[in-house]
Image (cartoon, rainbow, N blue to C red; front, side, top):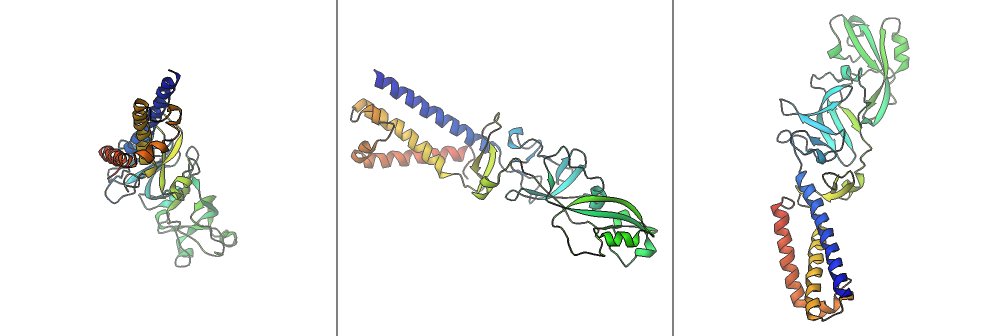
Length: 305
């Protein structure tokens, strides 16, 4: 009587484990990679596209949208909309640009507070307003902020700022996010037209990405993050198949042994080597049938293509 109750309890635990595992896999399947247009930036966790992917597919603060030109847009709480050129999920970097091709103007008002993003590197730049005739052909100017009489310069050289101070007005000195800090640029100016490169530290998905898998929430209501394989690439972990097939096989074979009383029940779920040795051919056939069945199920729910 006690053995039968133990067997039933252990089988229930096995089934509950499998239900949770299938729930996690289904959650991963619901969060397939999305884009705003063909060939555009692939969007997946921790990002999500509003209106295309469920809320549980993205981490708070990582919502993206598609504009009327089908471009991917990131809205920073205090700095407005930026277009997304690229997302590197391995290095956790996002590359942004301005739709009006005047990133320097946006940098003058950039405020990353309230967002999960920050600059990868920073460099101090001083913005100068100078007479066009004075700086024309001598320095790189920011054309989108300049006109026929006044030209705007940006430089990280304090020597240049001091040299130009008698002829130019200082607009502002700011710490600007840059892709790489410049050290040896004395006397040079920049139009700051390169894309804005930002990074994030939370959630930290580097371990998952390094292993060739992706981050994701364990379930729709969970804030716990786990790794699973990219269904679009067909790299679903064979560990899932192994766990699913072998756990069901264990339950099934234990039930057979329970009825036939070939081995003690207390040994059943902790290993059925004796049964395997006696029924090697039947085990292989059963394993093939179950793995084939699970492959079909995974294909039906979109995990394997």
